[in-house]
Image 1 (spheres, one colour):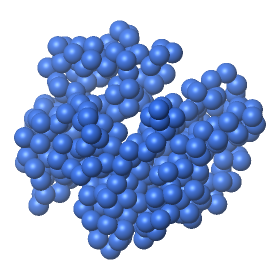
Image 2: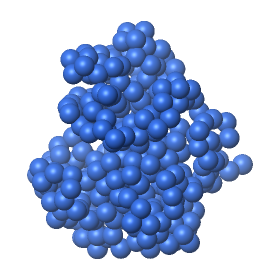
Image 3: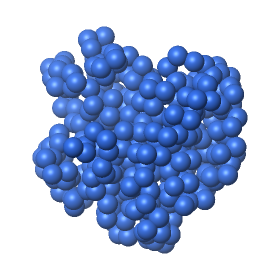
Image 4: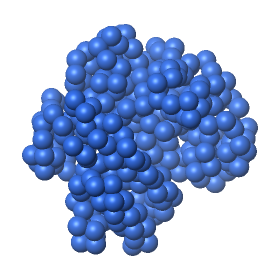
Length: 338
């Protein structure tokens, strides 16, 4: 059986074509299209016509490529850059009208839940009670669980690109006061979630996402060419030292560091501050870098529950539930407190 998954994120559109053996998705081809959608949104977060046109072209190319590899229509989803856009409905309608593709937008809590599933399957049961952190361009997903699915999941507005645009828009490198303001914001938003992680006392803590992978490489982890089975660990102490290094560098200088790609150099400092703050406030000294994340979680759930699960996914659920999952933890933030 061949299957494909397609995600539109803040920086890239990624396609993964997989063969399924014994319920495990084994990659046969991957491709990506660099769009940097997060840099094209206006001040209100709208994507607008030009960014939507770029997205449509990339998705069309991805669908064509999936067809070339004899895969059915991809399981296509978009993350926070589309989910949070005020013109999201227009974007999704345009994508469907131009490509025939139904691009789904998952609630942040559902993303955390599915990412946890992918990480749990990769790490196995020997990892015990598991904490998960995933830094995206627009949000941070956090989850904890003792079994196959998490006991709680949360999504916070702490994406690396989102906070870069909010705090580091005008200066390069940023000023000490701007970095301090970013840290205060991150600590405030993380307060409740990290208190729960400390209370749960996980046996293993993992990190997924390209941001964490690049930060781990910056701190000395093996490069990606060594393959997914090499253990990669990000220590809090090393990340703290890397923050001190990143603060004094311009975006162009950061792009020359090990592991920091040019498209993500601008948001690397914010990502490092988010990651370090999450580790420190959760009482974690290190994170294991997990190569399976949201895409794999979606594939696994699809294989377990079939096409009806994917067809029935809702854009948002009023009570904060994954339509086929347990209740998600809603964390109080300034915008949600009356």
